[in-house]
Image 1: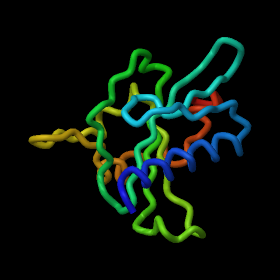
Image 2: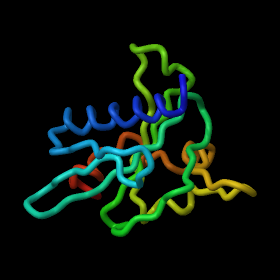
Image 3: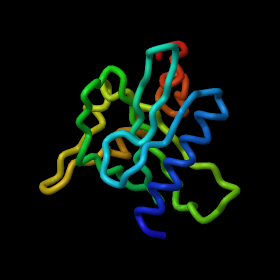
Length: 139
């Protein structure tokens, strides 16, 4: 499966989860963008979501993590745990506000990634933290 298909699968999975939770969410169009999903909360209040998908247990690329409104921008890290072709296995997801993402970033010589090992060791509170996007406790 191509990286493009992995990202599409991740984006649609996140969109599906948000709708299951009652969100008014819409997928944005385009291939090279920093916003994958827009979520309308209350009247006049919206947040943006950027989805990063990984078919296997690897770091997530973070080359373009700029946001005009970091306090209203979230990253959802989706890992299919090496089982992307197994439709009965749900991926693992971490919902991290942009304002809290920096400790999870790792700069290599030529690329910036979100470190899977740091997310696994220090990001437990963000796993399945959909309420952050929804505007619930802590959101």
